[in-house]
Every structure is written in C-alpha cells, then in structure tokens.
Amino acid sequence: RNTLASCNSQQSQRQRPSAAPIVDEFDGGCDEDISELNGELHNFITRLDEASIVYVNKPPKLLQDRYLVDEKLGEGSYGKVKLCVDRQTGDRLAVKIVTIRLVRKIPQGLETVEREAATMRQLKHVNTVRLYADFSDEQCQKRYLVMEFAVCSIHDLQSKGMTMDAEYFRCLPESQARHYFAQLLDGVEYLHNLRIVHKDLKPGNLLLTADHTVKITDFGVCEQLPESALDDTITGTQATPAIQPPEVADGSKQFSGFRLDIYCAGVCLYFMVCGRVPYREKNVLLIYERIAEGRYTIESWVSEACQQLIGALMAYKATDRPDPAKARQFDWLQNQSAAPVPGQDWIRLESVCEVEDAAATVARVRQAFEERMHRRSQYETHGLSLASEAALTSEQPDDILATDDEDDGIDFKAGGARCGQASSGASACSEAPPAPQPPAAAPAASTGRKKRRCCLS
Image (cartoon, rainbow, N blue to C red; front, side):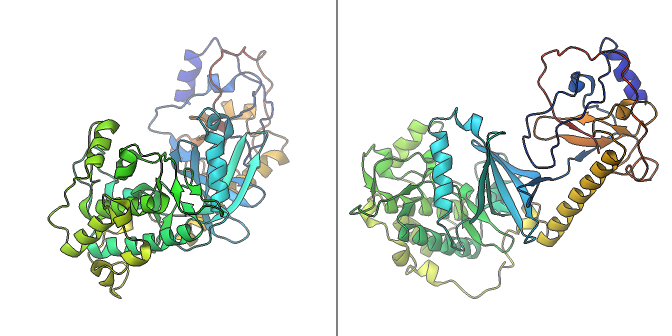
C-alpha cells in the first residue's frame, strides 16, 4: 500500500482508467498487440523495485487448442524459441515463434523461414530435429514451428557461464566428443542421402537431449539439390565465417556442397576437443585470409588418432576430404567402446545447464495453465475482466497489475505472496473479488508511450 501511495503521488496528474475488458490471451494469440484498457493503464502501473514484491512468470498460453506455450528458451534473428507441451500426447516440445513483420525487414527473411520449414518436414532421423507442426496466425502475423525439445547445444555445453572472449572454452573428453561426432556423421550422411546440403554445421546448431543424443538444427540456409543435378555443386553459402572451408574463403564461385559440410563437421570436432575454433581473428577478412592459407594448429593434448581425423576432414583440397562412410574407418572412431553414457569423465549437462525431468516439466506447465484457467473462470463468474478497476483499489491491495517488457508480461503479488497465493496465505482466487468501483473521472489521454503487456495473477 505504501508503494501504491508513492506511485499515486508521483502520478497525480493521471486519471484512473475504467474497468473495460482486455483482449483474451488464452488462445496464445498476439503477444505484442495489447488492448487499450480505456486510458493507458500501462502509463499508470509500472514495475516497482520493492523488496516486498515477488515477480512471477506469466502462466502458459494455449495454441491451436493443443499446445501449451511457456517460458522462453532462446532467441535468434528470426524469432523466439519457447517451451511447449502437447496436451494430447503429453510430450515436452519447443516452439519457434517467427514474427513475420520483423522477418520482412531481413533480406530474404521470408524465404529463409519457408526453406527451413519445408526442409524440416522431410526429416525423420534420430540425429535431426523433427518438426511436429507448422501453422500461422495471420491476424498476429506470426508463424509457429513446433519441434523437438533439447536441453542445450554443444556450444552451450562448452561455453555457458564463460566470457565469449575467453581464449579457451571447456574441452570435451575424447570419449564424449567421439560419442557426439559419430552421431553428427550419421545425421550428415542422412541429409546428403536426401540431397540436402546444410551449409552451416557448427556447435551452436548441434543440440543435445537429456540422454546425450545429437540433433542437427537450423536449416535456414540449407540447399536442396535438384534430382536433375549431376553432382553436389553449389554456388554460394551464407554460413558462419569461422567454419568456412578454404574454397569459400578463396572466393570460388562453385564448390562441392557435401565436402563443405564435411569440412564444417571437422571444425565442430576441432571445437569439441580443443575448446576453440581453428581460426580466431579480429574481423571477417582476417579470418578468411587465415582460412585461405590453410594453416592451423591442433592442441597438444589431443590424441594422435583424433588429430589425423581432424586433418582429413579439414583437408585443404575438397576432394581429399572423406565422406561419412570413409570417416568412420579412421582409428579414432573405431575406438568407440560400449562404455555407459554418460562416461565418468564427461561434462554433465546438469552441471552447466538447467535440466528438468520431462514429466516434471509437463506437470508444471499443465498445473500453471489450469490455475490460470481457474482464475479466469473466477473473474468471469463475478462479471469482471482480468484488468478490473478493483485491482487498483485500496480494498484489494494484494492483487496488483504489473507490466514488463513486451512478450514477457509478469504477474506479481505484494507482501511476499507467490504464484497465486495472497500474502495472508489464502488463495487469491478462493474468494470473490470485490465489485469494481466506477471511475473517478474520464480516462486520461494517451501519452504515446509504447504499449506493454499487463495481466493479473
């Protein structure tokens, strides 16, 4: 109450908004298109830096009456990736949410998104990420790609918690690197059999599941060779500079797509065992100069057998690089043992990343959604909107609207309440909320500030 009083005194010129309903967000619709609330409510309520206030993540939303969308897992150039639960199967998944209006600003952005979706629809292999659903919301200008869930990438496993300018990241034990690389070869061979050139194989695009299964992802720059093509020749690449082969660094107009992927796979293996990429320079031009020279060093702690395989995969001449079948014949891969996974000396996923049991994740998301639906029904029963005026009255100080950055709205409680529990210990939804009070005056005019999400727990 003291915090609210302070807020009111600082904003005495603003008028309290009326209790108009907000847009229903339970269908997982527009995350950024917030209703007006009849008077710029977001100008009146702000995030408060107060020790007695506990901020809680907003509850999950429902897409297509099937997929529950929860917290954000990651973010890229084309959109966000969020945790997702399939209500029908009970599977833990991930959904990539692409904002079309932003993608249109990126050169060939729409083409890249469509290429990725079209490629993933073909893939059904244990070492490639599987696409379960692909649908769009024209009103919100968003596209949703529902796919397999992964704990982290190989790059995350080796670098998370370290500064990006570190000279070395974590090095994987060779037994762990061998386990991952053998799966990478299987996935690359499968793609090549489908005449798909990935063109951007790097540790950040190699995902890991909780049981250490490698999943190749990010097919935005891949190329599908036509059936009429006589060979695997491609004419360009838009991949990460540090993984490019010498023929690309030399400026060649045409080169082998399959051998390019093999070189990139060699760079991935190098990163696993050395903890860094072969070429590190201050800018892209210097990186290309070093790659074109073809000179790099492998750390002394890497075994001779592993060095031989890396040297073959990263051969200067594309024709000298082995295909996946020949790469498996190298001694280093022949040493694959039947040791348990994970090995005793492995870097554990849970030591670097937050690993939650799949069943626990599904139960948690479902419970949060059910609680949200219960709160909704409670408000509807008493004829109130979720953003009712009563939330701002002194008669109900424990239920306060809060806002946060767009697409990441947060609910909070005052006085130490948490997750739908009032500070007195009783459920915030167990009693009927008081009837809304009429507005004291007409709504304040818009000040032009950016609209922000707000919701009531």
